[in-house]
Amino acid sequence: MKQTLKKSIWLTGIVFVSCILMAIIEVAIEPAYWVKSALKVVLFFVLPLIFMKWRREPVFSDSFSLNLKNVLKLLGLGAVIYGIVMAAFFLTRGWFDYSALVASLSADQNVSAGGFLPVALYISFGNSLLEEFLFRFVAFIKLSEHVSKKTAYLFSACMFAIYHVAMIGASFPLPLLALALVGLAVGGLIFNYVDDKSKNMYPSWIIHMFADFAIMTIWYIHI
Image 1: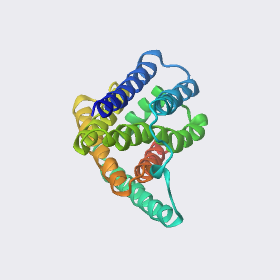
Image 2: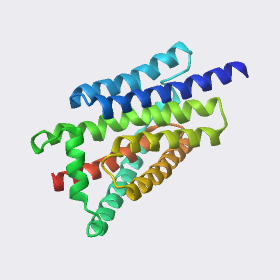
Image 3: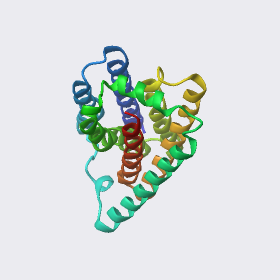
């Protein structure tokens, strides 16, 4: 019991530290985009990996197993997610000023039209993987081995939402910010659920990736 408690404290602590340091880097320090991305690799992947190796937590096990049948299912799911996000965009574009939000996003990321493609590819493939590793694999799958499943669900989803709201806080008006917080938390719970059902982190990564594809499409339309 004592060992389990220690591991749960360490796991939640490493997630807190990684998120706080990354928020400071993104909001306060604001380094060049690729410097920021490299630091995120260290904080969201390397640091948790070192910790888990130190605490003798198994890492690359069943949570990373995959077969061709599952790949096809996940790609189909991703296509559906992309379609839903794009449909929501086209249905609501008359109500929300997406161009202003995209302009703010471009300024925050220091991205121009000429530098859009590499950034979009990194966000869709790399950034989504880093976040799913920290928020789903570490903060949910691994944490649920040491605490109740309900606690892991809530911790992972809340950290996922709070981290992202901290990143976009200056860009969104308060009502939209509150809506984003709730939406991200619900999204985090859904991500946890699909990973819990499959016992690996690929379903949430595919959903996250294709949602980012859609966001990058919307960004490209307005950039």
